[in-house]
Length: 501
Ligand SMILES: NC(=O)c1ccc[n+]([C@@H]2O[C@H](COP(=O)([O-])OP(=O)(O)OC[C@H]3O[C@@H](n4cnc5c(N)ncnc54)[C@H](O)[C@@H]3O)[C@@H](O)[C@H]2O)c1
Ligand SMILES: O=C/C=C/C=C(\O)C(=O)O
Image 1: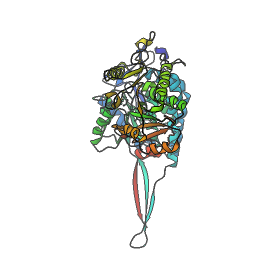
Image 2: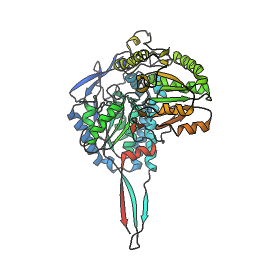
Image 3: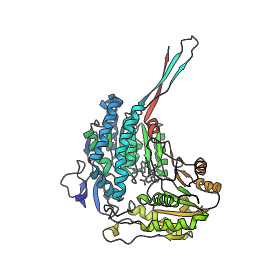
Image 4: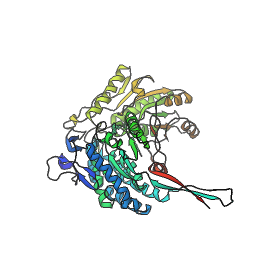
């Protein structure tokens, strides 16, 4: 197993088990109060040992980031930073296979998925914000003054400072670079705390940063857990100037509390309980393909994924049967094999959570259309955290399965009769992240899209991403928007200059 682990400076050479390091001030340092195991979710095998940062290690990282603001990074032009970020993108692509292997080992997601989404997006995030920073504009206003000479106002942008970047495990490189790239483009420095479940690719990126000419201290990575560990130490560090977080809503609340001390700005991308609305006038093939991905891609561990499927009654039976066939075609197993289309859940702990919802669905009277248990797999995959893709019908709107984010490969399908009624059902959720609408009637599509209370709506598609568009959630799904100029708004401070003429 360890031979499949890419060797990099962060891993102690020659050691039987690879050991990751933090990446602080341009160097790999193994400091910490202890270390923890990082295991491959498809087999349970040990990938590497990860140091847990204590508060002194976090302090080192934040201070390095603070110093770097005043170093060459802070003096570079936008063009220079942009060119360096392009080199980072090139560096990821040059080591594509290493990043791919590391991401598949950490997450268990199929290689076919990570090679199409996670790793190319990791690179694309740097390119898109390298472009964006070159076209960033600010406002000017001329004003009249009593003496008739007037005044000119113009705004300038500066970096916010040291940004804490706290990330989840479901799309590790993609979601981390989605924050790091715009933060760096705007001249900030970052301290990244990757998820304890997926620490490897963020560490590898340290090497790429050094090779690309990112000065020491600009990109730092510290490992550990959340509460009473690296995550909490980092977000409550007084020299952190802004916090960007993607993860669970409850963790988002803790991060907001930490940010309140010192009145630091937060950007929060949180959970969802997303609905797909499938109208009888949809293109059924497209709807089945799209909803299958929305429910089962990444084993259901996508914040934008669908766990509530509303289908107009005339096509309810046909749709349910076809989604069942699509679910049963998914092939769990070795994520490195090209034919595997369903990976495991991230951990045994998360599997226990998902299986508890499978049990709740049964207890709440669901009809199980398919799945509901653990698939039979040969060793070593029998030790992985796999679950069956699962479809229910018959659950009530107030059941736990219909209200709470499960983050597994499962959905409940509900028939509906009226457009207004299904909009009301879709909106009856504390979350408001994403919706997909399936209809060939574009007038209806626009009408419905304007009424669903979410940040992201897809019509006849799902997870189709233009990186310039606003991305984020309403209600308990988050605060703020990422993407294009919206990311730049968070990572810069606007200052107005008023010049009396
Ligand atoms: N809206 C989005 O864009 C988006 C994208 C991906 C995932 N998500 C959400 O993320 C969740 C799954 O990810 P997860 O389980 O890794 O989330 P999580 O909230 O458990 O953990 C995310 C990160 O926060 C850290 N953390 C935990 N407690 C902390 C604390 N008290 N202080 C500081 N840091 C702390 C963790 O160590 C980890 O690095 C789901 O709810 C999913 O919907 C949202
Ligand atoms: O699991 C959540 C997926 C988030 C995706 C993005 O943030 C993105 O595509 O930019």
